[in-house]
Each structure stands twice: as C-alpha cells, then as structure tokens.
Length: 171
Ligand code: IMP
Ligand code: MG
Image (cartoon, rainbow, N blue to C red):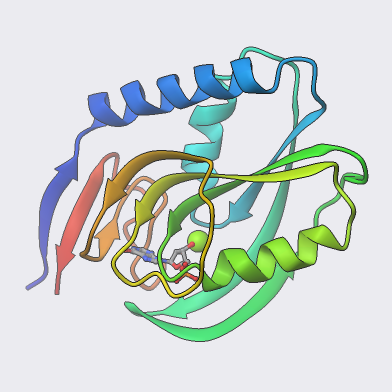
C-alpha cells in the first residue's frame, strides 16, 4: 500500500504563493508580463498565482511531457505551443517543480526562439538533489531536497493531482 506523508499544508501553500505573487507584482511593474504555465503540473499553482498578481498580465500555456512513473525518461515532448505572440514581451515560465532541470532547459531553448524581451522562471517547488543542469530559478515558493511528491497539480502516473496539499509519496 502506498503512503502519503503530508509535507506542505494548504495554509502554507497559500501564504507562500501570496508572497511570490506580491513580489512578481513589484518586480514586473511597468513591464509586459505574460505568465506561461507548463502543463500539466502547473495548472493549480498557475490558477492561484495569477490571482495573487495585482498588475495587468496575460496567460498562456505550453505543454511538455517527460515523465513516466518516478524517474525521468530524459525525453521531452512538446504537446502544446504558446498561442500568444511573445516577441518583445516579458515571459515568466510557471512550473510545478524543477527537478533535474532538463525539462526547463529544453523549454528555455524553445522559448528563446520566440524572441521574448526576458525569460524568467517561477516554480512552486525547487527540488535540488538531482539537478543536472545549471538553471537560475528566479522565484521559488518552496525548496526541497528529495522525495517524490504529489498533490496540488503534481502527479504520479497522472493520479493525485487533485490532492489539496503536497504529500511525499512512499510507494
Ligand atoms: P525535470 O526535467 O527533471 O526538472 O522534471 C520536471 C518535471 O518532472 C516536472 O515538471 C514534473 O512534472 C516532474 N517531476 C519531477 N519531480 C517530481 C515529483 O517529485 N513529483 C511529481 N512530478 C515530478
Ligand atoms: Mg511538469
């Protein structure tokens, strides 16, 4: 039987996302902010974050798929391209979790081809233990060292995204 060990409770998630939204609102004042959520894992974080940002901004989504089970396949598939014109705009990529960094590196390479004015990274969780590539995470709500976590958009084989808080999954 799998075990779900609570790691981050709802009030703490709310508090940190609020703080991050306030910081983004200050940092991007006068800029042309577009939040670009990375599907599917970021959808809940994105929905909460956008409502904590008080300046005008737009939202787009890109889709990638890289994981089966708990280990990276190393392959990244683009399942959805952005809809908005991003050239000359200030793109903030919104991720659920940065683990090895491979996905984000590929996304940044791809987004660079669209010539935005700036590209920065905002992640709900920065998981550093298995980082393989150097990535500057500009905004991170929580840092974790290890574990495989689910809930609040994060899945294990597409399940458990609906859990309202974040759990360490022990298989
Ligand atoms: P990376 O390419 O290794 O940085 O992995 C990025 C993607 O892997 C994330 O966007 C997640 O979808 C998935 N992932 C990595 N670690 C976890 C985890 O602990 N729980 C659920 N998904 C994870
Ligand atoms: Mg993801």
